Image (cartoon, one colour):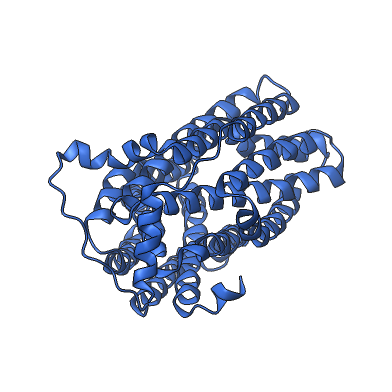
Length: 406
């Protein structure tokens, strides 16, 4: 981690992108609350998040764009354009369609920025610092997501939507500025003559043809198919398990944030001693243990489970993203990242709906038990498959990174 903090461009870049997370997290919850206050409708408020998710579903197209242009100017333009888009919310008034339109564009931008960030990082850093950089970003973003939704809701209640919108716009401008001052030499993007459908699906085909990536993605998708249960189960853990008010969920969220920080600090050393696959598998195992702890109804164990959940999220994300960066040539990174995100997001979103329905007829401990079994199965799958040597894509990516930093 010390070498990473001593790398000028990495420090600037990660700080700038973490700032954009601050604005994102503050805005999405505040907009849902704002629509609820103006309409009194839970359905209208829920459509704010639905519009955002619909925007993220275009990730395969944004991933293709990331691979067709230079990533640094794309990140600058996308951050500034998203800041301008958010400004439209100041004129929304009673026009809910404008709020939904902006949130759709926000989801689209979120996919574009995420893939571009993933694709630029291997050009910015030596290959051996990728794990530490991904861990640092996960720690910063997870920590900010613990407090910034409350910040957004508090600002909205205190001064209305204007300051929340202004905060978000400012973070996008700062993120664009952080990218603008980077000293990175980016090769000209590939100009393939592929059929459009072949170009769009190239990321998914690369994952399917690369065993280490395929195995990790399959395991993470298995876990994601039940991970959304947490969105509903956490309220039952607090109410039925601990017999506390819903506000106590904030304590569990703080414990989760502490676990994420600890997990982020340990992620790079674990990968250095084992592998990206082992880190992701450890994250799945941590999630299974978290589920078992939260079934107990004992405060100390539930807090430990919340901390393990924070470790789980960071380890799975860092392991998967770092492996993706090391196993994918630069010309495909945007599409591979977009394909992976889509493959995980769809089952996770479905599991949120299933969990919300199942909690009405099943005890929350049954859902936690199902989650624990599925997570253990996913971790066991990763532990069983044989380790693979670095692919040609990995060696090509590392060599390109080394050439850029001589």
